[in-house]
Length: 335
Image 1 (tube, rainbow, N blue to C red):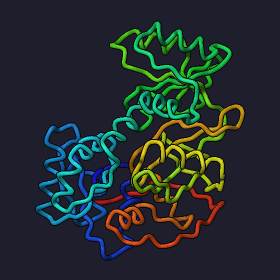
Image 2: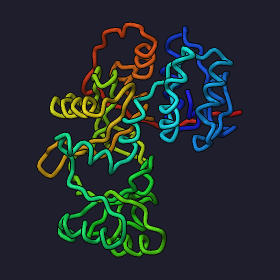
Image 3: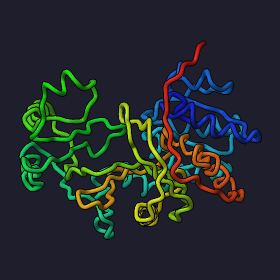
Image 4: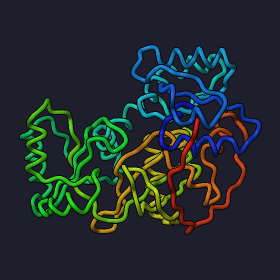
């Protein structure tokens, strides 16, 4: 398991440790990643941006006789998918979708465009390359009457995501809200985006309804388990309170996306309801989501089930405890 320093790593280590047959190694590019002190088998890895990253992972797997790689870091997915066949030739499975799927899913603009071409309902959006395009997109989306969102086409962990609204009280935001909120005035956005090289942005309608994280298990485009949970409270973009909801329309929507993109393994989706109550995709995480451990409370050990699937074992029947609520909290590790 890579990404031992990721916020969700401790929970995923806990999930995988439920089966004592698993000889788990965890790795990270940070020598003091939190997970290092939660599990005895730690391997220092190169960064995902290193051109030899995937080759080095393969070498480690051969050396340690590791049969399965579970990547937790978004930037690792593409290099690992590109070398998927090399791993397979050595009898090593990599829990990742195909290279084509990863290239689409990891680029928010490409993903929206692809799904729209395949008749999947998505928010109204525009891909912009400069400040004039940005202003035009805002106007088309009904600003200032309507709020809108923007985010870089390629980013992860809520980096670069903002909601632009004409009805902000910046004094209230300054004194009554903690730093890290997503709201921004139009003028502030224009000022920042005009002061540096302009990145490709996805500009889309703001979805005002309930937000959901959806944990999924898929096998080469076939949905196996879909488990939506409401995002009642978030800290730094990470869900820390919610309830598992059996919403058949939401489940069906995510099933369509899995089939259309041919997704594989543990997959995460963020979905919000439009002003008309329609579930629409915010983004896809084509990997294990950090809060996936919360599903244990509903009776589902997603990382472990994904391991069983990847290794050709029969997935046991599961019984979902719908309407279970959860709350997550910080703890410490001492070393």
